[in-house]
Amino acid sequence: MNMNISIKGVIFCLLTISGVSAQDVHLSQYQFDRLQISPALTGMFNGDKQAALVHKQQYFAVPVDYLTFSGSYDVKFQDCYDEGGFFSGGILFNYDQSADSKLSLASLTINGSYTLPLTTSLFVGGGAYVGVGQRSFSEKDLQWDNQWDGSMFDPTRPTGESFDKTSFTFLDAGLGANIRLQGVDRTKLDAGIGAFHLNRPNYTFYDNPNEDVRLPIRLSFYGLGILKVLDILDLYANGLYQDQGPYSETVLGGGAIIHLSNKKAREVELPLGAAVRLNDALIPQIALGYDGWKGGFSYDINNSEFEVATDGKGGPEFFLTYTYKKLCPLKQTKVCTIF
Image (cartoon, rainbow, N blue to C red; front, side, top):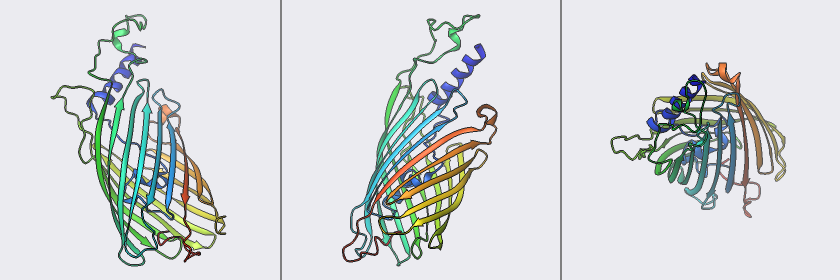
């Protein structure tokens, strides 16, 4: 028991004080939460407005499980039938909580982007975001080695720990760039970069000016592609590499989208696929889309060294999106030049 208490204390200190483990929200189905990987993808969808919700829970088998929630909304500010480029805007909310300390991160950002068509099949775009975040924890359920009296744990004993504050807020800003190759109908490819926390906000629970802990810049490099093979079948492939301080992740995925119905306002599609987070997890995925709505599920099957603790149970992730498409009265058979 003394060993368990000491380990919790060490892990908690690493997470909250030194900041070496300060990482952002990371999702397995990132292609459905585009603002998470680059602000330049704001408005980059087939439609006029889009809302997305994502819920993820990890590591049920260990006492430091993670809970993640993300919600976003973005909209094009002008008719995409107009000649020239278009502006888009959006908001992104993230909430993340973990372990006995309920160590949490809540953030809200405002995104903006501009997309310019260079040809009928080539689009370039840039985006930026500004926002605010809050980091907090609770001491209520924490256990420390000082509370071990040699034979048993005594929660009434002093912890010997003190913090200047249990929460703090910070300002945040970032940029992104995107290239869209638009083929015929559903064929498309997005590739780009997102740069987050460019202002390197201070990230510590101490007021000591000598304890200067900065949130590392996160860089994300991505590719999101769909190839129409038949009227009823598309193939897709996605790739994401992210780097933040000493940490990095690579997620590669692919699969098929079966179009069960292509009737206008009655479209039905069934995406089936899988992804792999290198050196961490295998991720089967399934989704269903109907008339602007799309919902899906994935499960992280942990295969890293952490599998000894998790028993392979990485955790489920759910998403739900809704896309509103405004039909143009002059072009009833076409919604937008961006598919």
